[in-house]
Length: 308
Image 1 (cartoon, rainbow, N blue to C red):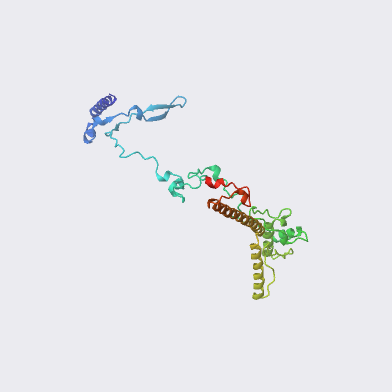
Image 2 (cartoon, rainbow, N blue to C red):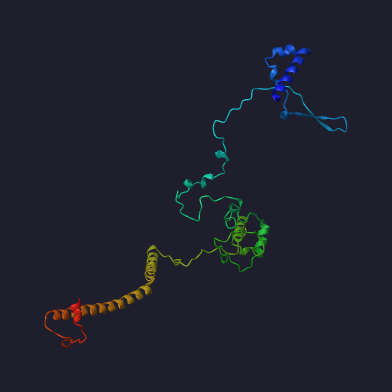
């Protein structure tokens, strides 16, 4: 109904335009005048004009004549698209079962296929508190005068070989020349290198070679002699290695020896008993009427042979 009303209004407007003398222009255009209509309420365009009173803004409706085209919507040819691969997060294929090297079988029951990567378990990084990082430990370069003053702080009896390299599980960090800086391994060797670059003499010795419990003896005369030393050492190493658990094996051998003696005694007794019984049985079944009193063992029950 609204559409028909709008068309009627458009026709009336076009007639008025033709009467005013605009008919020639309207006739030249191929535009259908019945297709001209005012914008419906949903398509209202407003203009803000400044009012004369108190400069307030007044909202007015514009009356722009527009041409309408036939409305035709093409239906979607397939299901509407929800996601595309570019919308998925990075490494999303790591949550698929086929991506994992263990395949379809979930071998580790405590390692799920889908592990959510959120802020809590991705930051801070696992080794952030422990790994050295990519920056150099001591980034500050000291002047020659500063290095001289730092060397004056070190006590006279101090030696570089007294300061051990910290174990790997301790995070390496250096705070520069502060307090007793020579007790920090990393600071000590950084400053030692800076003294070398600055041409300052280093009075505190050099780090000796590191020793372990398994060091070879320090002497080396020629190849044959050192080879004899090494062979002798490896011979004793193998001897001690072979003697590991020897007391246990000796105890087992002793127990086995005692048991074998006992077993032999038992076997001898049971075999002798069997032989004796068989012989008495043969005497009973031979027909000679013997009694237990005729035998050296008087406690035989000869009737037991008849009950077998």
